[in-house]
Image (cartoon, rainbow, N blue to C red; front, side):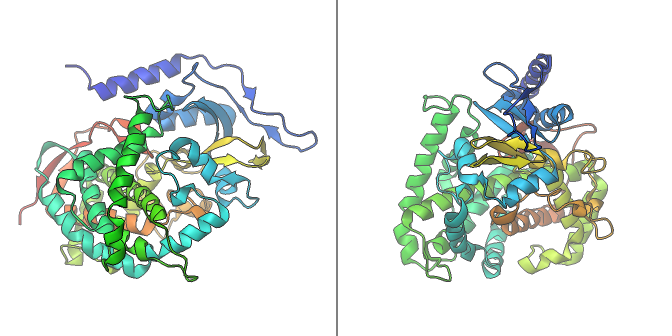
Length: 472
């Protein structure tokens, strides 16, 4: 039979990229005379494709090679455009703190996913972003998070109860279905039933659409499927708004329909549709990646799996509430280390709206940027032994992430820091708690999942694990 298709595709892409000889470094643009700034150096990569294959099949390896050659700020061609990549906490802070207002989130993300997540809060800048975020924060207050936790636990229990133990249980697709079920019940307020698969496929298509090399509405292409899926999601949410506005339910959809800022600002119907599409994607996709990879690391490190299981048992409850999260410190260590090793949003997009400087390099206006969260968290000198799973990095005695405020930034930073980060953390831990109490899992020695790239690195081989139910 040979290697699985995903493995063959990955290896072929890696071979193709590695065989391209490195060209002479080229400058992105010459710095202004007397500025003391250095030019951004780089190379375009393969003809037409640039570094696209490298970033899709081995984003970390590609970033490491380019960093070794060019430093913390470098340029290349990928995804149909010229990009400057920024790695290292100092450069990340410059871009995300955006103290000089030189970086646009709307224009950065707009190129990649604007067609699919139009008017999502992440794709807004400055005053408009503040306006929408103020209203949206009403949906993520503490009392809302408590109610969301109570609502998600029954969905978690039903989902895990349906998982069939076996030698090669496909963990990733099962987790993806579970997080979609949770998101629709907690955020939309209903079970999707027969329509679940269709909407699940739609969410996948809008995420993958942003990776299209051919960025045109051509039937059969990723871009085309993403646009069609966006229209499906718009129609789905729009038709439910009248009932949500008239009702008093506490799901996120209803909350957004009624939410008001302190100044009495509210969302239009179009705003609600846009924010629901973006929020469900973010909650569904990132939580799936984080949970699946956390399960994988606990399979490879059974000592940590048993430590977390003992902690969950000691809690004495089959499900956890929002106030129980502080009683699971070991789980939090493993969760944080998983976010370091496998940031579910691996790159953050921006575009410069003025000439600026990053790490002493001149970056002209109109430059598309990718901020390398995932590679920075997996590279020296910012982390010791960065490929080793070591949750104790985050223990009170060490706190390695405090070396720099942006050395560990899986939720982004500053005003664009993920508004749903507390919900996502809560969801992953609530699922893991129930799984630990009822199951044990493992993977064969030496197994590593075949990784692809969506919002961040994810296991394209389905992440098969040996899953067994615990007695009693």
